[in-house]
Every structure is written in C-alpha cells, then in structure tokens.
Image 1 (cartoon, one colour):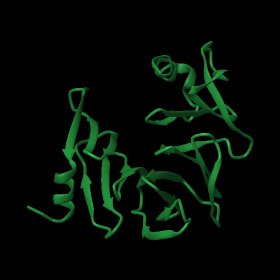
Image 2 (tube, helix red, strand yellow):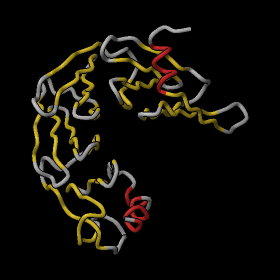
Image 3 (cartoon, one colour):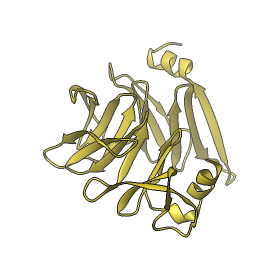
Length: 214
C-alpha cells in the first residue's frame, strides 16, 4: 500500500476526482479506477506501477464525489449512483429536476445538496429520511455523525441535520478549509501575517455549542 499512497500523492492525479477512505482509493480518467487493488497500470498517469484496477467504464464511471465505508458515490446533476468497492451497483438515486451539486456519505446514509435543500437518504433502502433548507450562499463540504459542514468564503457553518441547529465559525478573512471527523472539527484559515493556522474543536465541544451550552 505504500506504493499506492506514493502514487496517489503524485501530480499525475490532479483533476482526476481522487477520493479515498481507508484502503479504498479511487479516481477518474474516463473510467473509474481503484488504486492498490489490481495489477493494471494506472491509466492517464505517468506511473508505471501495476497497482490499479478498472471498476467501471461509461456513464457510471465519473465523477466520484464521496467514498466511505466501502461505498463510492458517483454524482451527476440528475442522479447519484452508489457502487461498492468492486464497482458493483448498489443503488441509483434519480433526481428531477437535475440539480444535484454535491453528495457525501455519512455512514450508511447519503447527504445530497440540491438547489436550496439538503436531503438525507438511507442507502440500504433508498428512503429519504429528512429534507432541510440549505442556507443561502453556502455549499456542502462534509458530513459526519449527522452534522453537515457548510462553507461560504471565510465562513464555516455546522448544521445538525436532526433538528437544524447550527454553529457558525468566521475565524478571519480569507478562505476557510474544514473537515469533520468522529473526534471533532479540524479547520484552517489564513492569518494577517501571511501564514495560516489550524484549529481543532472536539466533538463534545461542538455538541455543547450546538445544544446552546455556555
């Protein structure tokens, strides 16, 4: 797997919708390709390592929007296709109108950002579990444990899907990057001296603030 990770860090993969979780690492070159689980050369790159396998070709091959728990989400404006780690079809979520902007896994659930709304679906059954208005000007960045991470320029909003309660972070001017993990929130932002800062907020602290605690 070390060779796979070195391959994935190469500039060869820039713009290929590289996504991964655990040992499931995939990218697009017109086909859906998995790194580290095959004996093919990685297509579309300069790598000569024979560590790739082609999972899908054609309409359901790209682009990859999310990978988690052995599942792969392929997003198009009118549908999100869920595949397993071997490229086998698990479920297709069709949408009318064709307005899907992002899709992210949260365990066995799929969070979809459509025009003006966030919708949460159970992958196993295809059932829509809830629908919430999307705050104006934000875009879906991440979701974990029922909490969505929304970004808008220099602002990050965390919204709990179950009750809609939210927490807004605006650490300073400039773009903010954020990633939510089971342990808590990691976010980074530019500082006035031209540098940057990385901040961690524990899950317990986030829940306390979402609950309106002091």
